[in-house]
Image (cartoon, rainbow, N blue to C red; front, side, top):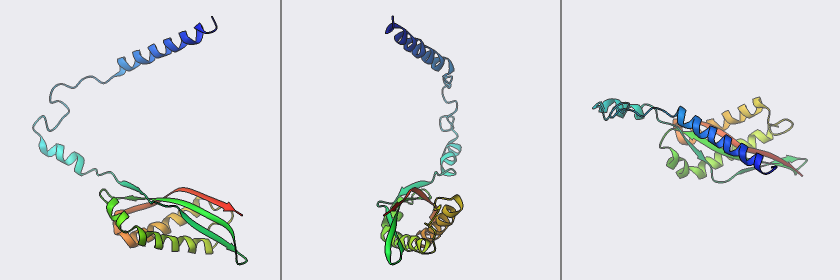
Length: 160
């Protein structure tokens, strides 16, 4: 009986889920209905995709490692993973310019570290906003207006 009750509950739940899915499924469209190209309106079909180009997200290959120096010694390391939000078709240009982009971003990260940006509550929203804006400015300087923003996907501070 103990093994039968959970099995019965699973079967009832699965049956209820299947029934709800079948009942709530969308009604099948009539032939040509809902498809502008099938109805002969090729202009509407072409503009539906061209006006709404989704951005691309490009994850930079390697993490950025920024040392925090105190009293002429490395006290901590900041490790970041970054991605770029770019206009559609921009991925190849990002990878083609990645060495220059990484160099300039690393310099901005060093500047941020040297001004105390990674000390204390470095994950504070205002602090991260300043960092994101600075990195976005650098990325636009290298890649142009195709860069929408820089995303900080991972950040960690490793104290010694």
